[in-house]
Length: 316
Image (tube, one colour):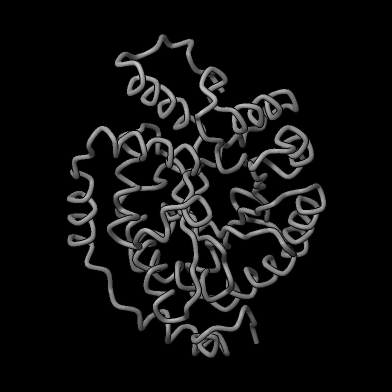
């Protein structure tokens, strides 16, 4: 039997059959309607004052990320400095929410952001494929937390999920959540590999039932990552989950969000779907590496009326 934080739906995880019955009993997703609504919300006009607020809000929601084999301590230190003070020329610029690194870089990142509000997030559980025994995944998590990680971004076993082994996936999330201790847990579905919107809805509910603090679209390592439609679907899920259980869960679209225009479209999705309670970096994040630079360029343009040169921002 699998266990997680108690809530109104805890009994649906009592067995594999009850969990399957619940997940397959969720309403089917109207793909055409979902994509049309996401596209419609993306056309909303944002006025100058609201745009300035949205850009600062988006900056404060960025998990500034480097997840490359060539990451060095120097690169991570520079990333941490940028997260703390994204625009050294303008100290009114908010810090980002977090820096996101591999477990072996957590201690370096922690030192780089010390004394600031910036959190250190670490991908764990054999990121990005998740192909490792559970014991290895849990060791990965515990080492990251011991090194100072405030947040853990885990990947689910997509093979088990697609094979219909929902309770196995649930139990793995529960075990990782326990290994996190006080660190918050973001559960990555890799939506591009789940094939259908119905699967994304089921994965969202499965992650929340297991105690996820955040549900996250993607690793950023596959062809299809965050889209307005899959993020809208996940926002509907967290909204409905809170309505049924009283438990609020965050959402993190990751991968492919590169411009201020894109980020603002996602913020409109949040406001119109889940509501203002999610318009805070405690409940909504952007997983991004290049987005911050465009936000800074657009922020500077609003302040001065012109674009700065390409050397205004650092190239990460």
